[in-house]
Length: 303
Image (cartoon, rainbow, N blue to C red; front, side, top):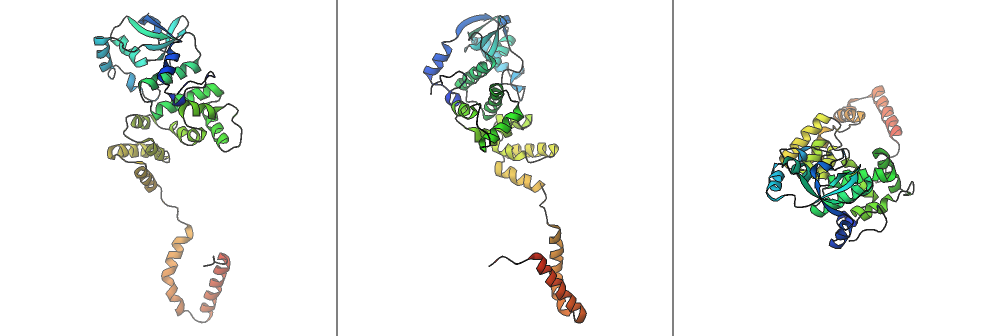
């Protein structure tokens, strides 16, 4: 899979071939940078966007130990910002290196690049090292799209649905970009991926930890009571529920709507045998009422 020639077009399914990756990294310069000159821009890196757990000193201890023994084996990807290095990819390695009291870090400096290109590089680097989760892909993808289109998140979701329904043309080329970058189109992002934006932090963590499938969490979105939604999430994780199990639990929370006349009809069934007891004016009135009811219901369906 190769990179698109057009700037910002992304890479097919995010994972470039070895040759394509080499072409990307050839644009950068390997530097042994003082750690004091390396910084993380707040809110840029996708890690910790939905949970800060991955970046706490406790969760980094294993990586800190490895760095103390072997150093930083994979260079961080950085860009120039105000004369210093801003992390594009490798925030965990950076924070672990700080905890390990390193004085220098190996970095691949891509020079001055804008936020959109930096986000794409971060996705590529992460995809090359790991298999990006659907949560990471979605959060990063929507952030990139908001930058590309100038829309906020709600406007973007509305735009995706309007394009999907053929109500407006795809003037921003979002469909082509999504297909080239993620191998999925507008319908998937409008109808499925956009739902992930409404997951709670606890639900995101459950998906990331593979405790619950993303489709199972989709079902939880139908629960309006947030307390009950948290209870169901806990139960679903503990019992290892699939989407169908969660759907049944959610349906059980919602009482079935019963037509107000059905209760009366059920009671009337028991009284029908007593019609034969009516005579005279009462029987005539009953016949009239039955005729009125039939007229009200109209002709029945054939067969």
